Amino acid sequence: MSILVLGTTALDTVKTPYGKRKHMLGGSAVHFSMSARLFANVNLVAIIGEDFPQKHINFLHSKGINLTSLIRGDGKTFRWEGEYKGDLNTAITISTELGVLSVFKPRVSEEQRSIKNIFLANVDPDIQMHLLKHMRSSHLVGSDSMNYWINTKRTALLKLLKMVDIYVANDQEARSLSGEHNLIKAAKALRGFGPKMVLIKKGEHGVLFYCDRFIFSLPAYCTEKVIDPTGAGDTFAGGFMGYLTKAGKVNEKSIKVALAYGTVAASFNIEGFGVQRTSVLTMPELNKRFNKFRNSILF
Amino acid sequence: MSILVLGTTALDTVKTPYGKRKHMLGGSAVHFSMSARLFANVNLVAIIGEDFPQKHINFLHSKGINLTSLIRGDGKTFRWEGEYKGDLNTAITISTELGVLSVFKPRVSEEQRSIKNIFLANVDPDIQMHLLKHMRSSHLVGSDSMNYWINTKRTALLKLLKMVDIYVANDQEARSLSGEHNLIKAAKALRGFGPKMVLIKKGEHGVLFYCDRFIFSLPAYCTEKVIDPTGAGDTFAGGFMGYLTKAGKVNEKSIKVALAYGTVAASFNIEGFGVQRTSVLTMPELNKRFNKFRNSILF
Image (tube, rainbow over all chains, first blue to last red; front, top):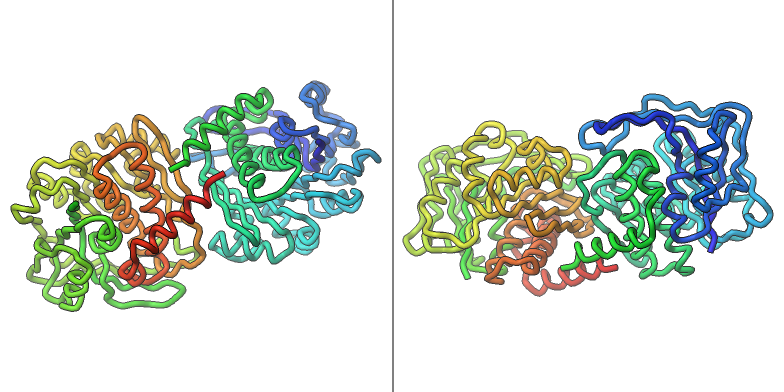
Protein backbone atom coordinates (compact mmCIF):
# COMPACT_ATOMS: atom_id res chain seq x y z
CA MET A 1 0.00 0.00 0.00
CA SER A 2 1.31 3.42 -0.95
CA ILE A 3 0.70 6.91 0.29
CA LEU A 4 1.89 10.16 -1.20
CA VAL A 5 2.68 13.17 0.94
CA LEU A 6 3.23 16.70 -0.30
CA GLY A 7 4.81 19.12 2.13
CA THR A 8 8.03 20.70 3.24
CA THR A 9 11.51 19.35 3.79
CA ALA A 10 13.13 21.88 6.03
CA LEU A 11 16.15 22.76 8.05
CA ASP A 12 14.79 23.58 11.50
CA THR A 13 16.46 25.45 14.30
CA VAL A 14 14.60 24.84 17.52
CA LYS A 15 15.11 26.02 21.07
CA THR A 16 13.18 24.50 23.96
CA PRO A 17 13.86 24.47 27.71
CA TYR A 18 15.79 21.24 27.02
CA GLY A 19 18.31 22.67 24.59
CA LYS A 20 18.83 24.01 21.11
CA ARG A 21 19.39 22.22 17.79
CA LYS A 22 20.52 23.99 14.63
CA HIS A 23 19.52 23.12 11.06
CA MET A 24 17.94 19.78 11.93
CA LEU A 25 16.10 17.80 9.30
CA GLY A 26 12.45 18.83 9.62
CA GLY A 27 9.39 19.93 7.66
CA SER A 28 5.81 18.75 7.46
CA ALA A 29 6.42 16.03 4.85
CA VAL A 30 9.40 14.65 6.74
CA HIS A 31 7.59 14.41 10.09
CA PHE A 32 4.58 12.87 8.36
CA SER A 33 6.82 10.28 6.70
CA MET A 34 8.43 9.19 9.95
CA SER A 35 5.17 7.73 11.26
CA ALA A 36 3.46 6.88 7.94
CA ARG A 37 6.44 4.70 6.92
CA LEU A 38 5.49 2.21 9.64
CA PHE A 39 2.23 1.46 7.80
CA ALA A 40 2.75 2.11 4.10
CA ASN A 41 5.22 2.92 1.32
CA VAL A 42 5.68 6.65 1.60
CA ASN A 43 6.25 8.77 -1.51
CA LEU A 44 7.56 12.18 -0.54
CA VAL A 45 6.87 15.20 -2.73
CA ALA A 46 8.89 18.24 -1.72
CA ILE A 47 11.63 20.63 -2.72
CA ILE A 48 15.09 21.12 -1.28
CA GLY A 49 17.73 23.73 -2.00
CA GLU A 50 21.34 23.49 -3.04
CA ASP A 51 22.38 23.60 0.61
CA PHE A 52 20.42 20.52 1.66
CA PRO A 53 22.94 18.02 3.10
CA GLN A 54 23.34 14.72 1.29
CA LYS A 55 23.30 12.95 4.69
CA HIS A 56 19.63 13.89 5.13
CA ILE A 57 18.81 12.43 1.71
CA ASN A 58 20.69 9.26 2.60
CA PHE A 59 18.85 9.15 5.90
CA LEU A 60 15.38 9.46 4.29
CA HIS A 61 16.39 6.84 1.76
CA SER A 62 17.48 4.50 4.54
CA LYS A 63 14.03 4.85 6.09
CA GLY A 64 12.45 3.49 2.93
CA ILE A 65 10.97 6.79 1.78
CA ASN A 66 10.51 7.02 -2.00
CA LEU A 67 12.36 10.19 -3.02
CA THR A 68 11.56 10.12 -6.74
CA SER A 69 9.65 13.40 -6.42
CA LEU A 70 11.96 15.17 -4.01
CA ILE A 71 13.37 17.82 -6.30
CA ARG A 72 16.29 20.15 -5.79
CA GLY A 73 15.75 23.77 -6.74
CA ASP A 74 18.12 26.67 -7.30
CA GLY A 75 18.43 28.47 -4.00
CA LYS A 76 18.26 27.71 -0.31
CA THR A 77 16.25 25.07 1.50
CA PHE A 78 13.20 26.21 3.46
CA ARG A 79 14.31 27.14 6.98
CA TRP A 80 12.30 27.65 10.12
CA GLU A 81 13.54 28.85 13.47
CA GLY A 82 11.36 28.69 16.53
CA GLU A 83 11.33 28.58 20.27
CA TYR A 84 9.10 26.93 22.85
CA LYS A 85 8.70 28.29 26.35
CA GLY A 86 6.74 27.29 29.44
CA ASP A 87 4.39 24.44 28.72
CA LEU A 88 5.82 23.94 25.21
CA ASN A 89 2.36 24.12 23.70
CA THR A 90 2.93 27.04 21.37
CA ALA A 91 5.88 27.70 19.12
CA ILE A 92 7.19 31.23 18.81
CA THR A 93 8.43 31.63 15.26
CA ILE A 94 11.71 33.54 15.20
CA SER A 95 12.29 33.38 11.46
CA THR A 96 11.04 31.72 8.30
CA GLU A 97 13.06 31.64 5.08
CA LEU A 98 10.98 30.25 2.24
CA GLY A 99 13.93 29.81 -0.15
CA VAL A 100 13.12 27.36 -2.94
CA LEU A 101 9.64 26.80 -1.52
CA SER A 102 8.53 30.07 -3.11
CA VAL A 103 8.99 28.62 -6.62
CA PHE A 104 7.85 25.07 -5.87
CA LYS A 105 5.71 23.42 -8.55
CA PRO A 106 5.27 19.82 -7.43
CA ARG A 107 5.37 17.08 -10.06
CA VAL A 108 5.25 13.37 -9.51
CA SER A 109 6.14 10.40 -11.69
CA GLU A 110 3.54 8.73 -13.93
CA GLU A 111 3.46 5.81 -11.55
CA GLN A 112 2.95 8.03 -8.51
CA ARG A 113 0.05 9.83 -10.17
CA SER A 114 -2.07 6.72 -9.57
CA ILE A 115 -1.46 6.57 -5.80
CA LYS A 116 -4.88 6.56 -4.15
CA ASN A 117 -4.05 7.96 -0.72
CA ILE A 118 -2.72 11.48 -0.59
CA PHE A 119 -1.84 13.87 2.20
CA LEU A 120 -1.35 17.53 1.43
CA ALA A 121 0.69 18.65 4.42
CA ASN A 122 1.11 22.29 5.25
CA VAL A 123 2.31 24.33 2.26
CA ASP A 124 0.76 27.15 0.20
CA PRO A 125 -2.80 26.03 -0.78
CA ASP A 126 -1.99 26.90 -4.41
CA ILE A 127 0.82 24.34 -4.32
CA GLN A 128 -1.53 21.81 -2.70
CA MET A 129 -4.10 22.41 -5.44
CA HIS A 130 -1.45 22.19 -8.13
CA LEU A 131 -0.50 18.70 -7.01
CA LEU A 132 -4.05 17.54 -6.45
CA LYS A 133 -5.01 18.44 -10.03
CA HIS A 134 -1.96 16.58 -11.27
CA MET A 135 -3.07 13.32 -9.58
CA ARG A 136 -5.40 10.73 -11.09
CA SER A 137 -8.62 9.84 -9.27
CA SER A 138 -7.88 9.40 -5.61
CA HIS A 139 -9.35 7.26 -2.86
CA LEU A 140 -8.64 9.44 0.14
CA VAL A 141 -7.23 12.97 0.28
CA GLY A 142 -6.23 14.63 3.53
CA SER A 143 -5.00 18.18 3.87
CA ASP A 144 -3.47 20.35 6.54
CA SER A 145 -2.86 24.09 6.59
CA MET A 146 -1.76 26.83 8.97
CA ASN A 147 -2.96 30.21 10.21
CA TYR A 148 -0.68 32.03 7.78
CA TRP A 149 -2.58 30.60 4.77
CA ILE A 150 -5.95 30.97 6.49
CA ASN A 151 -5.22 34.66 6.83
CA THR A 152 -3.52 35.34 3.51
CA LYS A 153 -4.97 32.77 1.07
CA ARG A 154 -8.41 32.04 2.42
CA THR A 155 -10.08 31.84 -1.00
CA ALA A 156 -7.50 29.37 -2.35
CA LEU A 157 -7.79 27.30 0.82
CA LEU A 158 -11.60 27.18 0.68
CA LYS A 159 -11.39 26.09 -2.96
CA LEU A 160 -9.04 23.29 -1.97
CA LEU A 161 -11.26 22.16 0.90
CA LYS A 162 -14.06 21.41 -1.56
CA MET A 163 -11.81 18.76 -3.10
CA VAL A 164 -10.44 16.99 0.00
CA ASP A 165 -11.96 14.23 2.14
CA ILE A 166 -10.28 15.03 5.44
CA TYR A 167 -9.29 18.43 6.70
CA VAL A 168 -6.78 18.36 9.54
CA ALA A 169 -6.43 21.49 11.65
CA ASN A 170 -5.28 22.45 15.10
CA ASP A 171 -7.75 24.12 17.44
CA GLN A 172 -6.56 27.66 16.72
CA GLU A 173 -6.75 27.11 12.97
CA ALA A 174 -10.19 25.49 13.23
CA ARG A 175 -11.49 28.46 15.23
CA SER A 176 -9.87 30.99 12.95
CA LEU A 177 -11.13 29.48 9.69
CA SER A 178 -14.65 28.72 10.94
CA GLY A 179 -15.19 31.77 13.13
CA GLU A 180 -16.60 29.48 15.82
CA HIS A 181 -15.19 29.15 19.34
CA ASN A 182 -16.85 25.89 20.34
CA LEU A 183 -14.82 23.19 18.62
CA ILE A 184 -17.80 21.04 17.67
CA LYS A 185 -19.46 24.04 16.08
CA ALA A 186 -16.14 24.83 14.40
CA ALA A 187 -15.86 21.27 13.08
CA LYS A 188 -19.44 21.44 11.77
CA ALA A 189 -18.71 24.72 10.02
CA LEU A 190 -15.54 23.31 8.46
CA ARG A 191 -17.54 20.28 7.32
CA GLY A 192 -19.79 22.77 5.56
CA PHE A 193 -16.79 23.98 3.55
CA GLY A 194 -16.53 20.61 1.82
CA PRO A 195 -14.45 17.94 3.56
CA LYS A 196 -16.55 14.97 4.72
CA MET A 197 -14.28 14.53 7.73
CA VAL A 198 -12.76 17.11 10.03
CA LEU A 199 -9.97 16.32 12.46
CA ILE A 200 -9.09 18.91 15.08
CA LYS A 201 -5.78 18.46 16.88
CA LYS A 202 -5.71 19.95 20.38
CA GLY A 203 -2.08 19.31 21.33
CA GLU A 204 -1.81 18.08 24.91
CA HIS A 205 -5.61 17.87 25.04
CA GLY A 206 -5.93 15.23 22.34
CA VAL A 207 -8.05 15.19 19.25
CA LEU A 208 -11.61 15.67 18.04
CA PHE A 209 -12.94 13.95 14.94
CA TYR A 210 -16.12 15.03 13.22
CA CYS A 211 -18.13 13.55 10.36
CA ASP A 212 -21.86 13.48 9.65
CA ARG A 213 -22.31 10.05 11.20
CA PHE A 214 -20.33 10.37 14.42
CA ILE A 215 -18.14 12.49 16.63
CA PHE A 216 -15.16 10.94 18.36
CA SER A 217 -12.62 12.36 20.73
CA LEU A 218 -9.51 11.04 22.38
CA PRO A 219 -7.27 12.53 25.05
CA ALA A 220 -3.56 12.81 24.30
CA TYR A 221 -1.28 10.00 25.41
CA CYS A 222 -0.08 11.13 28.84
CA THR A 223 3.58 11.92 28.85
CA GLU A 224 5.70 14.24 30.91
CA LYS A 225 8.70 13.83 28.60
CA VAL A 226 8.15 16.77 26.29
CA ILE A 227 11.46 17.71 24.64
CA ASP A 228 10.38 19.27 21.35
CA PRO A 229 6.81 19.25 20.00
CA THR A 230 7.82 20.41 16.49
CA GLY A 231 6.17 18.13 13.97
CA ALA A 232 3.82 16.42 16.43
CA GLY A 233 0.80 17.35 14.32
CA ASP A 234 2.40 16.00 11.14
CA THR A 235 3.49 12.85 12.95
CA PHE A 236 -0.12 12.49 14.10
CA ALA A 237 -1.36 12.87 10.53
CA GLY A 238 1.22 10.35 9.32
CA GLY A 239 0.07 7.73 11.80
CA PHE A 240 -3.58 8.47 11.04
CA MET A 241 -3.32 8.44 7.24
CA GLY A 242 -0.75 5.65 7.31
CA TYR A 243 -3.05 3.35 9.25
CA LEU A 244 -6.04 4.13 6.99
CA THR A 245 -3.88 3.36 3.97
CA LYS A 246 -2.81 0.03 5.43
CA ALA A 247 -6.36 -0.80 6.52
CA GLY A 248 -7.55 -0.17 2.97
CA LYS A 249 -10.93 1.04 4.14
CA VAL A 250 -12.33 4.16 5.76
CA ASN A 251 -15.11 3.34 8.20
CA GLU A 252 -15.96 4.20 11.79
CA LYS A 253 -13.80 1.43 13.21
CA SER A 254 -10.73 2.10 11.05
CA ILE A 255 -10.99 5.85 11.66
CA LYS A 256 -11.03 5.40 15.44
CA VAL A 257 -8.05 3.04 15.40
CA ALA A 258 -6.25 5.42 13.03
CA LEU A 259 -6.84 8.33 15.42
CA ALA A 260 -5.38 6.29 18.26
CA TYR A 261 -2.30 5.37 16.18
CA GLY A 262 -1.87 9.04 15.28
CA THR A 263 -2.11 9.99 18.95
CA VAL A 264 0.47 7.45 20.02
CA ALA A 265 2.85 8.26 17.15
CA ALA A 266 2.72 11.95 18.11
CA SER A 267 3.59 11.06 21.70
CA PHE A 268 6.90 9.62 20.47
CA ASN A 269 7.63 12.66 18.34
CA ILE A 270 7.66 15.05 21.27
CA GLU A 271 10.12 12.89 23.22
CA GLY A 272 13.07 14.03 21.15
CA PHE A 273 14.33 16.93 19.04
CA GLY A 274 13.20 16.83 15.41
CA VAL A 275 12.88 13.27 14.11
CA GLN A 276 15.35 11.92 16.68
CA ARG A 277 12.79 9.65 18.30
CA THR A 278 10.38 8.87 15.45
CA SER A 279 13.18 7.98 13.04
CA VAL A 280 14.09 4.96 15.18
CA LEU A 281 10.51 4.10 16.12
CA THR A 282 9.49 0.51 15.38
CA MET A 283 6.05 -1.02 14.88
CA PRO A 284 6.36 -3.22 18.02
CA GLU A 285 7.14 -0.11 20.10
CA LEU A 286 4.22 1.74 18.55
CA ASN A 287 1.87 -1.19 19.14
CA LYS A 288 3.01 -1.57 22.73
CA ARG A 289 2.13 2.05 23.47
CA PHE A 290 -1.07 1.75 21.42
CA ASN A 291 -2.24 -1.06 23.72
CA LYS A 292 -1.19 0.87 26.79
CA PHE A 293 -3.14 3.87 25.52
CA ARG A 294 -6.21 1.77 24.77
CA ASN A 295 -6.18 0.32 28.28
CA SER A 296 -5.57 3.70 29.85
CA ILE A 297 -8.87 5.10 28.65
CA LEU A 298 -11.11 2.10 29.23
CA PHE A 299 -13.57 2.38 32.09
CA MET B 1 -25.01 5.74 51.67
CA SER B 2 -24.37 9.29 52.80
CA ILE B 3 -22.04 12.01 51.68
CA LEU B 4 -21.41 15.35 53.33
CA VAL B 5 -20.51 18.43 51.32
CA LEU B 6 -19.19 21.68 52.72
CA GLY B 7 -19.26 24.66 50.41
CA THR B 8 -21.19 27.73 49.41
CA THR B 9 -24.85 28.37 48.84
CA ALA B 10 -24.93 31.46 46.71
CA LEU B 11 -27.05 33.87 44.77
CA ASP B 12 -25.41 34.00 41.35
CA THR B 13 -25.84 36.60 38.66
CA VAL B 14 -24.53 35.25 35.40
CA LYS B 15 -24.31 36.67 31.90
CA THR B 16 -23.40 34.50 28.93
CA PRO B 17 -23.94 34.98 25.18
CA TYR B 18 -27.28 33.17 25.77
CA GLY B 19 -28.73 35.60 28.26
CA LYS B 20 -28.54 36.87 31.81
CA ARG B 21 -29.96 35.48 35.06
CA LYS B 22 -30.06 37.44 38.30
CA HIS B 23 -29.71 36.04 41.83
CA MET B 24 -30.05 32.41 40.78
CA LEU B 25 -29.52 29.65 43.31
CA GLY B 26 -25.86 28.66 43.00
CA GLY B 27 -22.71 27.96 44.97
CA SER B 28 -20.24 25.10 45.09
CA ALA B 29 -22.19 22.96 47.59
CA VAL B 30 -25.44 23.39 45.66
CA HIS B 31 -23.97 22.39 42.30
CA PHE B 32 -22.20 19.46 43.93
CA SER B 33 -25.47 18.32 45.50
CA MET B 34 -27.38 18.34 42.22
CA SER B 35 -25.31 15.47 40.82
CA ALA B 36 -24.31 13.72 44.07
CA ARG B 37 -28.01 13.35 45.03
CA LEU B 38 -28.43 10.84 42.19
CA PHE B 39 -26.05 8.44 43.97
CA ALA B 40 -26.22 9.13 47.70
CA ASN B 41 -27.95 10.96 50.53
CA VAL B 42 -26.44 14.41 50.42
CA ASN B 43 -25.86 16.39 53.60
CA LEU B 44 -25.22 20.03 52.81
CA VAL B 45 -23.10 22.17 55.12
CA ALA B 46 -23.27 25.84 54.26
CA ILE B 47 -24.39 29.25 55.38
CA ILE B 48 -27.10 31.52 53.99
CA GLY B 49 -28.03 35.08 54.87
CA GLU B 50 -31.27 36.70 55.94
CA ASP B 51 -32.05 37.48 52.30
CA PHE B 52 -31.93 33.88 51.11
CA PRO B 53 -35.35 33.08 49.58
CA GLN B 54 -37.41 30.38 51.24
CA LYS B 55 -38.25 28.99 47.79
CA HIS B 56 -34.60 27.94 47.36
CA ILE B 57 -34.70 26.11 50.69
CA ASN B 58 -37.92 24.39 49.68
CA PHE B 59 -36.37 23.50 46.38
CA LEU B 60 -33.26 21.94 47.95
CA HIS B 61 -35.49 20.09 50.38
CA SER B 62 -37.61 18.77 47.52
CA LYS B 63 -34.45 17.36 45.93
CA GLY B 64 -33.85 15.24 49.03
CA ILE B 65 -30.90 17.27 50.29
CA ASN B 66 -30.43 17.06 54.07
CA LEU B 67 -30.39 20.69 55.24
CA THR B 68 -29.79 20.07 58.96
CA SER B 69 -26.48 21.91 58.74
CA LEU B 70 -27.50 24.69 56.43
CA ILE B 71 -27.38 27.60 58.84
CA ARG B 72 -28.70 31.12 58.49
CA GLY B 73 -26.37 33.91 59.57
CA ASP B 74 -26.90 37.59 60.29
CA GLY B 75 -26.21 39.42 57.06
CA LYS B 76 -26.39 38.84 53.36
CA THR B 77 -26.01 35.61 51.40
CA PHE B 78 -22.79 35.11 49.47
CA ARG B 79 -23.22 36.62 46.01
CA TRP B 80 -21.20 36.16 42.86
CA GLU B 81 -21.61 37.96 39.60
CA GLY B 82 -19.78 36.84 36.49
CA GLU B 83 -19.76 36.89 32.77
CA TYR B 84 -18.65 34.44 30.10
CA LYS B 85 -17.59 35.55 26.65
CA GLY B 86 -16.41 33.82 23.50
CA ASP B 87 -15.85 30.13 24.07
CA LEU B 88 -17.36 30.27 27.57
CA ASN B 89 -14.31 28.60 29.05
CA THR B 90 -13.33 31.30 31.50
CA ALA B 91 -15.55 33.30 33.82
CA ILE B 92 -14.86 36.97 34.29
CA THR B 93 -15.77 37.83 37.88
CA ILE B 94 -17.59 41.11 38.04
CA SER B 95 -18.22 41.13 41.77
CA THR B 96 -18.03 38.92 44.84
CA GLU B 97 -19.86 39.76 48.08
CA LEU B 98 -18.82 37.38 50.84
CA GLY B 99 -21.61 38.42 53.22
CA VAL B 100 -22.21 35.79 55.93
CA LEU B 101 -19.50 33.58 54.43
CA SER B 102 -16.89 35.74 56.15
CA VAL B 103 -18.06 34.60 59.59
CA PHE B 104 -18.92 31.01 58.70
CA LYS B 105 -17.93 28.37 61.27
CA PRO B 106 -19.40 25.11 60.01
CA ARG B 107 -20.92 22.70 62.52
CA VAL B 108 -22.74 19.49 61.81
CA SER B 109 -25.07 17.31 63.86
CA GLU B 110 -23.73 14.46 65.99
CA GLU B 111 -25.13 12.01 63.49
CA GLN B 112 -23.52 13.78 60.53
CA ARG B 113 -20.13 13.76 62.26
CA SER B 114 -19.90 10.04 61.49
CA ILE B 115 -20.45 10.37 57.74
CA LYS B 116 -17.51 8.68 56.05
CA ASN B 117 -17.44 10.44 52.68
CA ILE B 118 -16.78 14.14 52.70
CA PHE B 119 -16.26 16.75 50.05
CA LEU B 120 -14.81 20.10 50.98
CA ALA B 121 -15.93 22.22 48.05
CA ASN B 122 -14.42 25.59 47.40
CA VAL B 123 -14.43 27.84 50.49
CA ASP B 124 -11.68 29.36 52.63
CA PRO B 125 -9.23 26.54 53.54
CA ASP B 126 -9.52 27.55 57.21
CA ILE B 127 -13.25 26.80 57.04
CA GLN B 128 -12.51 23.51 55.29
CA MET B 129 -10.04 22.58 58.02
CA HIS B 130 -12.45 23.65 60.75
CA LEU B 131 -15.06 21.19 59.49
CA LEU B 132 -12.60 18.39 58.82
CA LYS B 133 -11.36 18.53 62.42
CA HIS B 134 -14.94 18.45 63.62
CA MET B 135 -15.65 15.18 61.80
CA ARG B 136 -15.05 11.67 63.16
CA SER B 137 -12.69 9.35 61.26
CA SER B 138 -13.49 9.50 57.60
CA HIS B 139 -13.28 7.02 54.76
CA LEU B 140 -12.73 9.38 51.84
CA VAL B 141 -12.12 13.13 51.88
CA GLY B 142 -12.07 15.20 48.71
CA SER B 143 -11.31 18.89 48.52
CA ASP B 144 -11.47 21.65 45.97
CA SER B 145 -10.07 25.17 46.10
CA MET B 146 -9.56 28.17 43.84
CA ASN B 147 -6.80 30.50 42.74
CA TYR B 148 -7.83 33.13 45.27
CA TRP B 149 -6.98 30.79 48.19
CA ILE B 150 -3.88 29.46 46.44
CA ASN B 151 -2.60 33.01 46.28
CA THR B 152 -3.75 34.33 49.65
CA LYS B 153 -3.86 31.27 51.95
CA ARG B 154 -1.27 28.93 50.54
CA THR B 155 0.00 27.76 53.92
CA ALA B 156 -3.48 26.90 55.19
CA LEU B 157 -4.26 25.13 51.94
CA LEU B 158 -1.06 23.07 52.04
CA LYS B 159 -1.85 22.09 55.62
CA LEU B 160 -5.29 20.94 54.55
CA LEU B 161 -3.94 18.95 51.60
CA LYS B 162 -1.96 16.76 54.01
CA MET B 163 -5.27 15.59 55.44
CA VAL B 164 -7.31 14.90 52.30
CA ASP B 165 -7.40 11.85 50.04
CA ILE B 166 -8.38 13.54 46.78
CA TYR B 167 -7.47 17.00 45.67
CA VAL B 168 -9.62 18.35 42.85
CA ALA B 169 -8.28 21.32 40.89
CA ASN B 170 -8.74 22.86 37.49
CA ASP B 171 -5.72 23.12 35.19
CA GLN B 172 -4.92 26.73 36.08
CA GLU B 173 -5.09 26.00 39.80
CA ALA B 174 -2.98 22.86 39.44
CA ARG B 175 -0.32 24.81 37.56
CA SER B 176 -0.44 27.71 39.96
CA LEU B 177 -0.15 25.64 43.15
CA SER B 178 2.48 23.24 41.83
CA GLY B 179 4.53 25.68 39.77
CA GLU B 180 4.61 23.09 36.96
CA HIS B 181 3.25 23.70 33.45
CA ASN B 182 3.02 20.10 32.28
CA LEU B 183 -0.12 18.74 33.91
CA ILE B 184 1.32 15.33 34.72
CA LYS B 185 4.27 16.98 36.42
CA ALA B 186 1.80 19.28 38.17
CA ALA B 187 -0.28 16.31 39.34
CA LYS B 188 2.85 14.58 40.63
CA ALA B 189 3.89 17.69 42.53
CA LEU B 190 0.42 18.05 44.07
CA ARG B 191 0.57 14.37 45.05
CA GLY B 192 3.75 15.27 46.89
CA PHE B 193 1.77 17.77 48.99
CA GLY B 194 -0.21 14.94 50.57
CA PRO B 195 -3.34 13.80 48.73
CA LYS B 196 -3.05 10.23 47.43
CA MET B 197 -5.18 11.14 44.42
CA VAL B 198 -5.13 14.24 42.26
CA LEU B 199 -7.88 15.08 39.83
CA ILE B 200 -7.28 17.88 37.32
CA LYS B 201 -10.33 19.27 35.53
CA LYS B 202 -9.55 20.74 32.11
CA GLY B 203 -12.99 22.08 31.16
CA GLU B 204 -13.83 21.34 27.54
CA HIS B 205 -10.66 19.21 27.36
CA GLY B 206 -11.77 16.65 29.94
CA VAL B 207 -10.04 15.40 33.02
CA LEU B 208 -6.75 13.94 34.19
CA PHE B 209 -6.54 11.64 37.21
CA TYR B 210 -3.27 10.85 38.94
CA CYS B 211 -2.33 8.44 41.70
CA ASP B 212 0.80 6.42 42.37
CA ARG B 213 -0.55 3.31 40.69
CA PHE B 214 -2.05 4.74 37.51
CA ILE B 215 -2.80 7.78 35.40
CA PHE B 216 -6.12 8.07 33.64
CA SER B 217 -7.56 10.69 31.36
CA LEU B 218 -10.88 11.23 29.68
CA PRO B 219 -11.99 13.77 27.11
CA ALA B 220 -15.04 15.89 27.92
CA TYR B 221 -18.42 14.72 26.71
CA CYS B 222 -18.82 16.44 23.35
CA THR B 223 -21.56 19.01 23.43
CA GLU B 224 -22.17 22.18 21.48
CA LYS B 225 -24.97 23.25 23.79
CA VAL B 226 -23.02 25.39 26.22
CA ILE B 227 -25.39 27.82 27.93
CA ASP B 228 -23.72 28.46 31.30
CA PRO B 229 -20.68 26.57 32.59
CA THR B 230 -20.99 27.92 36.16
CA GLY B 231 -20.78 25.01 38.57
CA ALA B 232 -19.61 22.45 36.00
CA GLY B 233 -16.57 21.59 38.11
CA ASP B 234 -18.68 21.13 41.24
CA THR B 235 -21.21 19.06 39.32
CA PHE B 236 -18.29 16.96 38.11
CA ALA B 237 -17.07 16.49 41.69
CA GLY B 238 -20.61 15.61 42.82
CA GLY B 239 -20.92 12.88 40.21
CA PHE B 240 -17.44 11.59 40.96
CA MET B 241 -17.72 11.55 44.77
CA GLY B 242 -21.36 10.48 44.60
CA TYR B 243 -20.55 7.41 42.55
CA LEU B 244 -17.61 6.46 44.80
CA THR B 245 -19.89 6.77 47.81
CA LYS B 246 -22.50 4.54 46.22
CA ALA B 247 -19.87 2.03 45.05
CA GLY B 248 -18.57 1.82 48.62
CA LYS B 249 -15.03 1.17 47.45
CA VAL B 250 -12.21 3.18 45.96
CA ASN B 251 -10.21 1.16 43.46
CA GLU B 252 -8.99 1.60 39.89
CA LYS B 253 -12.25 0.41 38.39
CA SER B 254 -14.57 2.45 40.59
CA ILE B 255 -12.41 5.56 40.16
CA LYS B 256 -12.56 5.32 36.35
CA VAL B 257 -16.33 4.83 36.33
CA ALA B 258 -16.69 7.69 38.82
CA LEU B 259 -14.65 9.98 36.55
CA ALA B 260 -16.91 9.11 33.64
CA TYR B 261 -20.04 9.81 35.71
CA GLY B 262 -18.55 13.13 36.77
CA THR B 263 -17.79 13.99 33.14
CA VAL B 264 -21.30 13.18 32.00
CA ALA B 265 -22.97 14.98 34.92
CA ALA B 266 -20.95 18.11 34.12
CA SER B 267 -22.11 17.97 30.50
CA PHE B 268 -25.70 18.37 31.71
CA ASN B 269 -24.79 21.26 33.98
CA ILE B 270 -23.53 23.45 31.14
CA GLU B 271 -26.73 22.96 29.13
CA GLY B 272 -28.72 25.36 31.28
CA PHE B 273 -28.34 28.38 33.54
CA GLY B 274 -27.45 27.57 37.15
CA VAL B 275 -29.03 24.31 38.29
CA GLN B 276 -31.81 24.52 35.69
CA ARG B 277 -30.77 21.33 33.93
CA THR B 278 -29.14 19.32 36.73
CA SER B 279 -32.02 19.89 39.13
CA VAL B 280 -34.32 17.85 36.87
CA LEU B 281 -31.69 15.31 35.85
CA THR B 282 -32.65 11.68 36.46
CA MET B 283 -30.51 8.57 36.84
CA PRO B 284 -31.85 7.00 33.61
CA GLU B 285 -30.91 10.15 31.67
CA LEU B 286 -27.47 10.17 33.27
CA ASN B 287 -26.97 6.47 32.52
CA LYS B 288 -28.07 6.88 28.93
CA ARG B 289 -25.46 9.56 28.32
CA PHE B 290 -22.91 7.58 30.34
CA ASN B 291 -23.31 4.67 27.91
CA LYS B 292 -23.18 6.99 24.93
CA PHE B 293 -19.98 8.51 26.31
CA ARG B 294 -18.44 5.09 26.92
CA ASN B 295 -19.16 4.02 23.36
CA SER B 296 -17.92 7.30 21.95
CA ILE B 297 -14.38 6.77 23.18
CA LEU B 298 -14.01 3.04 22.44
CA PHE B 299 -11.71 2.17 19.57
